Image (cartoon, rainbow, N blue to C red; front, side, top):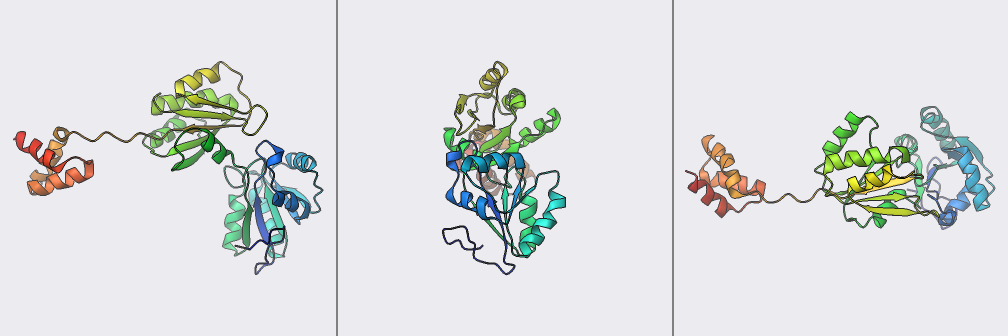
Length: 291
């Protein structure tokens, strides 16, 4: 990775240029970093998910880009990526920005990074605001282990299948959802996870009308159904609880099956106890009592 000297210049790579992924404010313009502001003014090329949003951003920050601005979004990534890589190989600094937050995280950018890395070109980042981390931090749910799931499938069957896969996920989960699909999504979470899981719906983070609602999925779905929900939304869901230790008497048949297959009783008890977390002594006693 290229070194940075505190200003906007990057230490030159073998090719001379660099792809720079820059996080933009998710709401409050005051969250823009000094490095972002400098690079918006000095980058040779700014690849923007929405050039109109970029125009509002630079105007709000008082920046006048000197480089070329081009559109780079999910519908033209394949066509535009070779052009950007050629520019980087020729020594240009290509600044990639999306509508809000960090590029390549549920936004365009991954294809460009993957291709740049494959060609041995310099890729670096200007870190900054993140809706994922902000929602996680504000949720009131465990933050030590988490996963980002982005947007769930829109089709009911595919959504149900994805949530079935996540039902046993122990880590805190972060999702994105559009306002008009929020109630349906929360109902699906209630059906898949049960209403005992704690959730947080985080809306309009860092903006004037920031709102974080916490509760069960059914409760929050009712709120979404009864209100005209607007804005950018992240949903944080509590992970699955630890399974209760299996009772020794419920494991007897499994031990007996291993014994019938030729295992010694002592060995069968040890294997089943280790896999279930049950006490070997109590499991052995339960097997003997069942004879």
